[in-house]
Image (cartoon, rainbow, N blue to C red; front, side, top):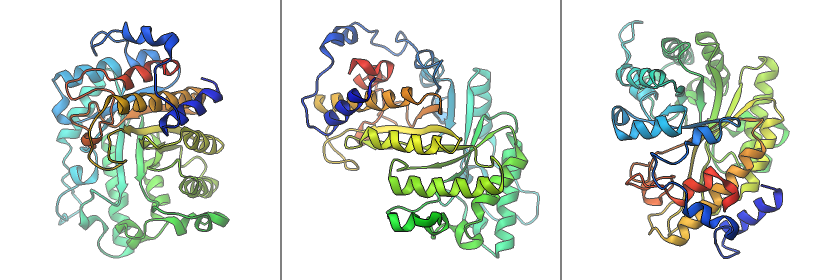
Amino acid sequence: MKKLNIVVCALLVLGACDFSFNERKKSEVEHEPQTWETARPLQDIYKNDFLMGNIISPRDLGTVRFAILTRHYNTLTAENQMKPDHIAPAAKPSNTNWEYRFTEADRMVNAAIEAKMKVVGHTLVWHSQTPSWLTEGTKQTVLANMEKYIGDVAGHFKDKLIAWDVVNEAFRDGLTSSDVSGGKWENCLRTESGWYKAIGPEYIEKAFLAARTADPNAKRYYNDYNLNSPTKSQAVYNMVIDINVRHSNLIEGIGMQSHHHLGTDPQTVRDSIQKFASLGVEIAISEMDIMAADGGALNMGQWSDSNSKRQAALYAAMFAVFKAHKSNITRVTFWGLDDGTSWRATNYPTLLDKDYNLKPAFFAVTDPNLF
């Protein structure tokens, strides 16, 4: 899709124009297969562009959900079972022989590998969903906890994963241009994070170093939301430059979570992709969904045909951007298989409805030019 078409789609999303399918291609949509079993697999459509992914939970194994995943996607990310609160010992260990809880994560990873799918680890270091004992104690104690956890966990999955989200959501919201001026990314971090409180800004660098030692073959990503914000993207940009100058290629990728809503401007996404691409790192659209219910971006609301079309138009605009930058994007992962089980179910953000029927958004992804 040419740049002009991207702008048109953005205007449609913002409600400046009447929403309608491209009349020239509307009949093609109507005659597309209407079930997930018969629709052309998304992974096949984008096989020459980037990997196509979704999330997985234990409930998916051995069900129709896993059949959908294996048909349409070639990459899986654990929704929760590879986060520290699921794997780390629940209570502080009394010795150095930590008893990890790998059972559920192992089941999912092994099932994915058996199905010839790739797996992304999510996540090693995060301020949330982490047992509090890991970040309690002196700087030396907490740093040792972090390095041991990363070493043990990344080591456990060594050579089974294509990538790790090593550090997740380290930057605070509401950054201003003055916050990011002069390249001082350390001033932009979440100060409430237990890792930050105990170790300081260098916890990020230490985490990536530990991950590289534990599994050098898994790509190391920094993952965050709202990275289409100019100030937040600049802060992350500054961090990657600083750390990678001192440790060549330590941070290998940026995960742009991409939890969007109907007011998101695709141009802001394009701008951030171009910014991160200039660093020479990989880019993953790591947690994509588009909220599309009446009542605002984060509020419960009613689904409507109008919102369905607006959502499809925005998915189409986003995928036009992704295709235009396919040389820099390694993966697009959706954060949810269907509206019924999405973490934002009340906002209908995925490609399938709660009964696994294909929404207009699905067809927008299969061919952005149709919308």
